[in-house]
Length: 198
Image (tube, rainbow, N blue to C red):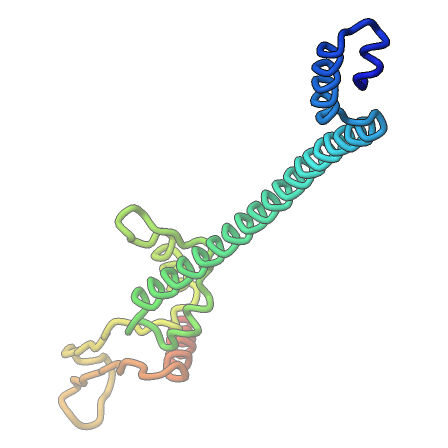
């Protein structure tokens, strides 16, 4: 309100002047209703936007968390599979080495005999000693003796054989030579079998 309006209300000149000045000072901080409503609406919109953004961020966070969890789980499965394969390879190498050591110098053909061993039935005790290997080798030696080098069975027979002998003193040294290869071992096996049937 201005000074004249205050005077019309019954204020004195001095009172009207002071009231008018006070009124003008107060109006400096006055915001028009339209502007106030606009700012108020903008404030509401901003709050709504912030709330929506927060919700979207939370949803995104959960989504990312699930994806990361899935990736971690996939990596764990992959690592477990690789570890299992490595353990199997190490175990196979241990079994193969145990077989090689067990048959070294005892067979006509190490590779052939090794291929007849069931590696799945070979395990190891706490000390690293193979279990189930000796039994398989023993069984193979009994069923396929020709695959194994036999102990030196050189025999010297000093007793005269019955019957008539030409030359000599009736005594002879019979030596059975040790087979040096697979062919000789097989031939010796069948020859001994044939002789035992006579």
